[in-house]
Every structure is written in C-alpha cells, then in structure tokens.
Image: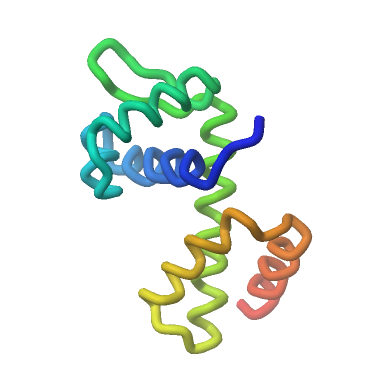
Length: 121
C-alpha cells in the first residue's frame, strides 16, 4: 500500500515511543506536536490500512506490516543522520535533513550509503 510521508512519520513515532512502554494517541500527539484530532484521524487511517491495532484501553500496537514499515523508516533516519554527521553536519541539522530524505531516497541509494557507513566502521 502506498503511504504518504506523514503516515510513515506516525509509524516511526509509535515505534520510538513503544520502546519506552505502552503508546496511546495522546503520546503520539505530544511527541509530534500535532493536535489530538489530527492524530486521531491519522490513527484511524493507519488502522484501516492494517498498520496498527488499537486496544479498548486506547493502546496502539504496530501490526507486522506497520512494524516493518516503521523499522525501515527508523533505520533510514538513523543511518542517514550518522552519514550526515560524519560529513561534519551538526547533529540537529543532520537529524532534520535525514527526516526529510528518509521518505524519498531510493532503496538503491540508501543501501549504498548503508554499505559505505558499514565499511567505515
């Protein structure tokens, strides 16, 4: 299923927050700085797309496909941030730029950067 950048950002946020414990829509709203209605609508779309499930108590969980998408975006963000920092880009700028690039970079280019970074280590 094709997904917009915003959907990927929500999935990545749920992944990041889930590493600290249970995740609710309000947690996503606070983390991303988005309004509760915007997050609620996005969660509905992610749920109908099969990317998340929502428990009766409001806890959000990534489905298998949601987790795969979130991990892919998170890996891209992490590696691209590291690559930019290795070029001398300040950490905060590298993180912001990686956040933009992670959604549009091709798998071929990303894999080349990933391999380059692995060889540098």
